[in-house]
Image 1 (cartoon, rainbow, N blue to C red):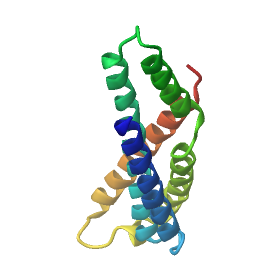
Image 2: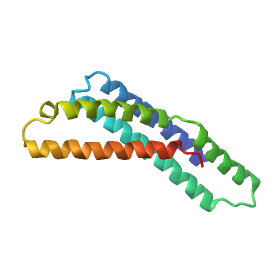
Image 3: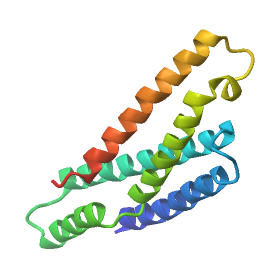
Amino acid sequence: MIIEGLVTQITAQTVGTITGYLKEAKQYTKEDVRACQANLKAANDAIVALEAEYDLILVQAKIADLDKDDEVDRLSGHIESFLTVDKLRPLLQEAVSELKGCHDSLLKHADRFLQWPWKVDDREDAVNEFTVLLEKLDRYLTELARPG
């Protein structure tokens, strides 16, 4: 079907983009905000792609004619692939792992990470917000790993 082919192509392109962001991040130390930015882009793109594929499965399930074995088999195959073929999740895990390193550096060196025009209070708020977002990413990964 055309949609599955398009999804496969988009996923391959997205994997390439995410891999590029992760490679870019490795060019910098964890104390460098550019590493953090590249890892955030990688995590964002991985989540967007995972959610888009999930949404596509829901749309396919809604429009599938359950009386046609080929449609049911195609949908079942897509679901099986989504659940077992991990192309995006390992990249998301890597990005989150690297973000934890950025977070540790941010906690130690917020004054170096966030330069002018931020005030001290703004830096503390930024570190707190980053902490909360990283915890949400961790929970998202945990949910992805849960069976069923």
